Length: 68
Image 1 (cartoon, rainbow, N blue to C red):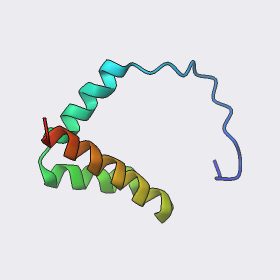
Image 2: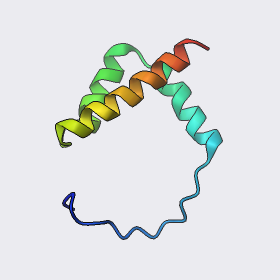
Image 3: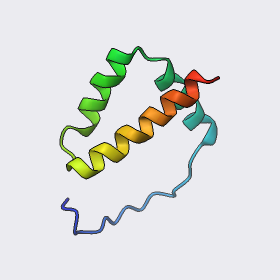
């Protein structure tokens, strides 16, 4: 799908806050090497502007997990 074409997803949009928190906690406990490898895999086909936004987001998650 190209950026200029809107998606027609029909999902309910329900987010499980507990599941998100669990995933956040796991991400923060990964060794730095594994986090970097995962980040490269997640963002390799993205345009650079999106790649940086996502990296910043996951860096913040890691910092929040480290502060707990």
